Length: 210
Length: 210
DNA sequence: AAATATAATTAACAGTGTTAATTTTCCAAA
DNA sequence: TTTGGAAAATTAACACTGTTAATTATATTT
Image (cartoon, rainbow over all chains, first blue to last red; front, side, top):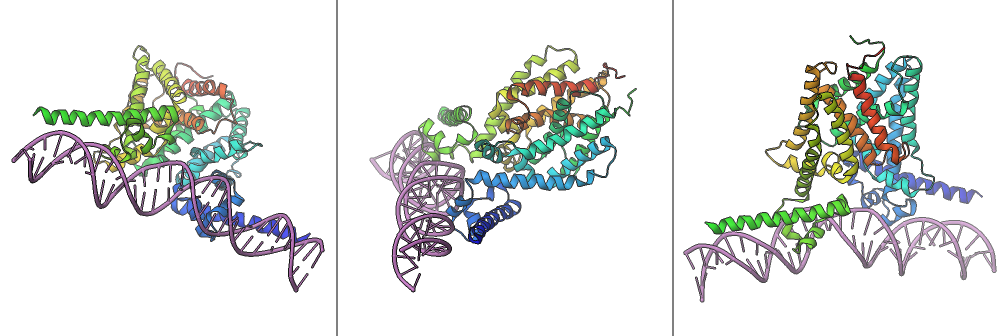
């Protein structure tokens, strides 16, 4: 049945066209400018056609948010070469901040916007694997640090939550313009780095206090 | 001129009516359900009348976001009786989490939504005094802790950023549904408390490691 | 009472996501 | 090769949104 096969391929092609158009609008004009009608214009189909390939707009944002995670994983490739897990943790934090600040729109849809999560809640096999993997790798890294005695032992989910919270908190406050009147734009990333360095410095057992 | 005075009072009354209606919609139906037409319906005026008292919708959200800060300051009254500044810092963190989790809509408009900040950026005397005051009191408290040798000395803006980031990060991840698949709903606040306790425990100089 | 300033309204614009009903396109069987 | 039916795409419409220009109604002043 080569015909059904080709049809399936065509279906996937149009699906990709929609996602590509969404992505183009997303990165060039921002979240709010990704509208069904603009997507339809770009791919030269009528607006309703989009609904033959995606349940609703949230589903499109779910795909965009997944692409964001892929982008982030790609950026974290530079961690592989770092043998010391504590050094890897430092760098992971820096990567996170760099990703968030240089791809603010992606960060927004990955960690702030409600749309992708609303999509998830309507799915049955509901997992948020992207987020689970991200926080999972932080947990694993922290366990490795604790096992090797590089940081003080503590319940890993508590420490993971604190560290993720810290970096996410700083990045999301910056993205949503809560720091503009507090820290000058050009010093933002520098202060963020100092903050994670301060945190990791205090839990680093190789730096003995007093 | 008692007449101009009365007119001014009437103007303020209608302004208050609009804000009260906005608030009612906001707390009962959420951010997205605060629409100009619904506000107009509630106060029994036409939608365009709202624009005679407020520049745009963002300005209404700016007022709501300020009311949120007042609510938060009120909640922080219980800090006054705590003599030990480090204990005050603990309690401040717990208050922050409690406020965010029990008044999620308010927290949203205060620290996540763009609307109030967009309003600010169109004003000339642009200050975000509400946020400045909040972060300012954290800074002062940290300085007091450092002066009394209760926590290790470090650049105060770096530590303030880290602590605010940590609590805001956890709360905003929770509010925007990024933790539902990671931490059970009923354990959320408990883990958050553990995370701030973990952080403050590590910088508390009275708890000597090793 | 007439003229003027203020307040409020109606009507409209340009958009949004989404759905039902209809038309067009395409493939398989007669 | 023509016909019947399934699949794909479209048009038209609904019920909204924030916001503005033009118009009407209400007060106040002359």
